[in-house]
Amino acid sequence: MQTIVVLSGAGISAESGISTFRDSGGLWEQHRIEDVATFEAWQRNRPLVIDFYNQRRKQLYEVEPNEGHRWLARLEQHFKVYIITQNVDDLHERAGSTQVLHLHGELKKVRSTVDDNYVVELDGWELKEGMLCPKGAQLRPHIVWFGEPVPMIQPAAEICATADYFIVVGTSLAVYPAASLIHYVPAEVPKFVVDPNEVRANVPNVTYIKSSAGEGLRMVAERIAPLVTFIC
Image (cartoon, rainbow, N blue to C red; front, side, top):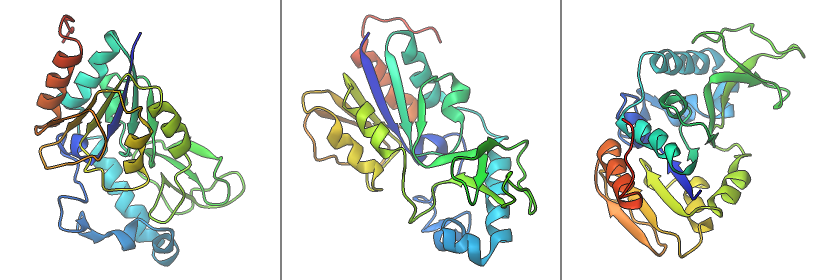
């Protein structure tokens, strides 16, 4: 069975109604990134950071996967599909994808501030002050904030090297280290970039599809599996 590796970004989730930093004038839900998505922000104004992610988490419970997510899940009927996502939502999983690697953490999980290995699913959408890990430290969002290491980048690079097809969807390939992953894909592998905006990747064998995620991924599926009938 051939392997498809997908790198997904905020654009695919935006089609489900989740706000993106790229499309909001440098603000994320009217907040500067420095105020809500750094460890310094956590130290400076913990209640603001907790509330910010509570609101993002609450919104996640209110939205649904879109046709882009569903097309990637359908590809598992005929391919081994690995999704490497920059997104912290669970929309890929809810659409039916079974192999999802989250580069930047997961919104529905929290972790200890003194033990990175203590990661648990949050019960509901609200993290509160005073919710502690077994070592007595406050729990924080399980999110890779700006300036923090991206521990899953090496496993992601290893997955990219196994691709028979590589799909980029909903990302401008401008955020590192995630943007570097396309360079781990073998040169001869067909690559598809799906985005309604202009995106350029300085690698060989790229087909650009300037389209929404849902429509663009349908087009990719038809190109790589023209004789396959997908159960929709």
